[in-house]
Image (cartoon, rainbow over all chains, first blue to last red; front, side, top):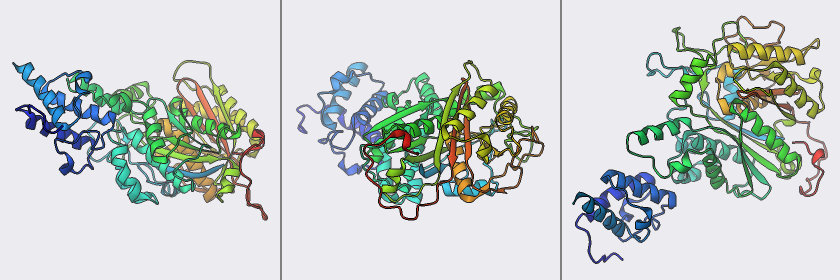
Length: 92
Length: 432
């Protein structure tokens, strides 16, 4: 899964924001564990935690992505790509 | 019977310290040093840190503290304080963390996290927020969820609303749940209620709350005094464990007090005004359940908040019920602890248990001109008290009245054998 065929050019920028919000939600999480291959669920975020992380990240980028579009994104990398793609489309 | 009590107040972090503070006549600080001029006087739990509290006051503090960051993520003050006091009473009562099917949670609520709600309203209005988790965190049910997860409680859990009578009402429901045989033990939880600026302003404008401080000595609450000017809002949480005599005996736990009577009455009137007949009716009903006469009561933990109309009305109701030659002694814990709103009734019960056990009644330091000199009010000095049945009351806007009779525990039987397991029994024979 980590070898996402086409990593979005803004992936790292979005990942950084996702990581920040994940640490807000799970302050006791070891930051070293937040590698792109891991999913929010793997890292211990429950459904309420995952929603808060994703919505807070969207707020930072001024995005509104339907929850349905995000269900396919499992890893942090995939999640970042979907959000980055939306951002690119929005600014185009 | 009550086998454990807990409190988190601006005066103290445990029920023991709280009882000692009351008997010493210490009262909550009304204004933080950095309060803006003209701010409503209040005693807040600002800076309450559940992790530090758990580490300092729970027997298994470090282990519980490790679970709290995730358990209480995004939680309001009511959820944090309610979960903490629940953990403390369960530890003190010697109940196992993995709750059995005979344990229940009863929450005193009804609009607990109003400041939390106001913050999210403001964030939403500003275009950021709310977080999805606010769908959960604005609800009183979030306290029950967090407490049940920490305690491993999977049997019954109830939320009892009732404004300032909620704490007393929650204890009434818990006692009845045990008497009816639906549970062997109940954890009654009264979280700290947090008001937003709007509720504080409304209470002030209604005349129920003390006005902004005018004097340099700080604002004080003067229940039953001619110079009273309203209640002092104080954020506090309380909890008690109530259980059947058999359940307590099975774990070898002594009773701190017995809930011998319990009652609720409505005034049948919408509004904020107190009603002496409703208050008299609920006190008589609680006495009747306990099988006691007014003359048997030695002490009343009054609701009295320091409100101008409320205290005068309550004084009349007390004189109506206790019209014999030796009326009970009366004080209001709000004279020292302020008014904890939904938690106030249960905090009064914690105070009553502490006074029964200490054999002393706490003072009302600012009582100098009693509203009724015949009322048996405890003045500025603590009094000795020969333990006797006590009455604790909670009254509320909406015409809600609640009362419980608390009696000192019976002396232990000399040859009490091990208690039988608690299954089938006659509810009416159970004393809670």
